[in-house]
Image (cartoon, rainbow, N blue to C red; front, side, top):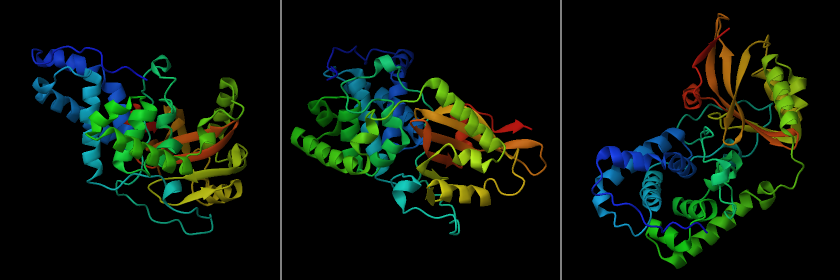
Length: 340
């Protein structure tokens, strides 16, 4: 287990610049933590800044009985729990409702803030990961894991993240959440039971042949070509038989090669679609992804369309999620438009 009880510096005598430099060193991991809790990049950024302001305001109450890191996690986690009490949980179409067929009408978008958002991959380096944790830092931001994690109530979610992802000790989790050790253990058991039903162990074990970097890049190149030339057959050839496809805030999702092929033929690749789309490679949630752009009606500019995350299983694609929100491009340092 991680030792988080080493001596910490005195805070009350620091000026704001010194204090800021100290807490900023924890910004990346706190941002990832708040994202796991909230499922939203912009909410995570807001909560991290609020955490730092509250820590500054309360610095004289810090007595050094834990580390600065543990103290910041306590503030951030409880802010997240308070936030989650005020809004609905975030989800993905695949955990919200049953799958649809391409013959069915496409439902209207649900634009309320109920959808998980993609996350720019800005985590601690692999060397900083803890091999003793049940879930690695990289896995803990994958969309399949997050979709299952967000089925949990807020406190169970916090317990599981703190214990199984961050590898904190039970006593420290209890201190952070203001609970007893038995109540933490009970919450952890319930959280693990629920998670196991929706995120089976086989999903986070290396039970399948791993694709090489070169082979993965080759398939991603073929994927981009299929999108940019509106090649339905080329796209379908890259998919697993049971691949899933969704485009939140549209609530429907689709499963299977034939079903996905029918959908893209009548929607994103309909008509004269070659050249309609342009993809810019990114890394999102520890997975391959793309900034997605669509050509405007004058054929002059590709306007930002959203962020796409592609999940591979071996050498085939098992899931494609397109987050249809141009504002998300900014979090990945992408331009809002591209010239044609």
